[in-house]
Length: 316
Image (cartoon, rainbow, N blue to C red):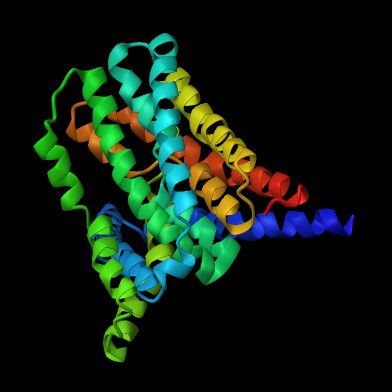
């Protein structure tokens, strides 16, 4: 009984703080303390400054040669690509109309790595989880952004062009923060204490502010529409993708922190950035918003169950 309670306590220590902050965001929005203007400005601040700074400080202070697991990163990239192909194939038969297929596919494989996924890893493993997850996040983010453009373009019959995709990746603040940090880490450059302390203040506000804004932006009333496609995407995001990716990782021998990061990142809800991309490309933005709302709520439960199962099996 004590072992079960220990496992239960660990699983909720991973997801519990995120649930509290998301719930607080919902409550503050309903009381009027968080307005649309605050949410828009806060989300922009997180994406363009705070989260890139968090990733930079984490990687810059880490010896990549010692902490980076090339095998974990390679597996994550290959598994993400393989799951994308499977989802594209399944969507041809399961999703109607055709123009919604890209929205469902990206909703199922594109995780909220930078906010919820990273928060899961920090809660589970502390600074070690943050350091190991940061580089993984950066490289997989590049891949999922490219795949998201491809699947939406295919279903909407719109051509984005290679140049536009490359430009979008090159100007992504998260990727810029990671790329700036890599030479600092590799060359073991000592940054001024003042710069590091200032950057740490900015980095420390990232996850609380991001989760508050995420909770405040959720609109569960919209779930009444597009329920069939929303449920399909949620099933893929919360069950199929994390289960297959985790089983593959276990079969290949990943254990401990590496297996935990792979599972936690895959279990994160659908990325909020997906809504922005769908809306900009003229897709079904309501469906995209529904998927984000449902997977954000459901991820707290499915991730807790996943952590409990791996922990009880002694794999993490």
